Length: 303
Image 1 (spheres, helix red, strand yellow):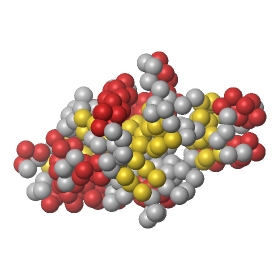
Image 2: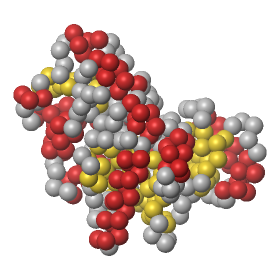
Image 3: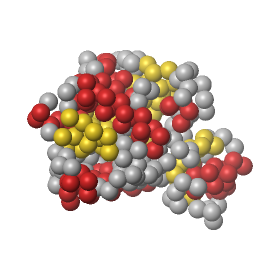
Image 4: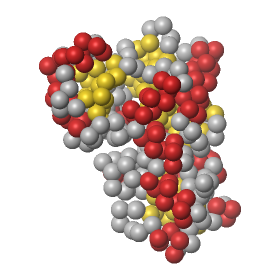
């Protein structure tokens, strides 16, 4: 493993997803060390990035989630420092973090994504409900892990859902709810891994369902016929590539009753905890957690 040199695992950070990032980063760090990689934890909330140069790190594994780690900022800093890093570049990271601008790109390219409205405190909430219909998903445009997100079943609940989301971001989306099968697709090195079907007794796949609940069901194989799954996986790659994403990531989508996929978002630095979806898909494809982490590290590049 000397080919990787000295590796910094970036974890923690300053976003609302700090605690999840600490878990992801610790698991990545342990996996790299098990495989003989000279890996070290590095929390950019507590240390200056200049230490990456001073301590002669050769490569960075980004296990940060959310703002300042997944939105292009850390990627730009690493490019200035000339240090290869895992995952997508500056443009793709910034686009994918912004759910509104992700939709604008997908709409321009004809990639199906649910209809939406941007909300402000001055929005005509009744008109939004009339246009999009209930139920609605309301979410901050620049958060992950379902933080600040709500499912609105009654028109009277839209304003409260907006207020919750606005605590996390000035840009808030109300999105048409697609009734159907919830799927997620891991992407690794230009390949879409087996789809995972998500089922939860909760209103939706929220923060608790993702990280704490024991009643969330992860179904892989997802139940689609082989040809249908292959078609969706190709569309996943198209949606991923449309944002110029690379290396690895995860695409979330809904499949309606007619079998039409509707793309929701792309996560360019997905969770790597014991509840996380990318390691689960990798296992089904024959990759252990350690194999997955090494493959991601191999795909690291600069610029």
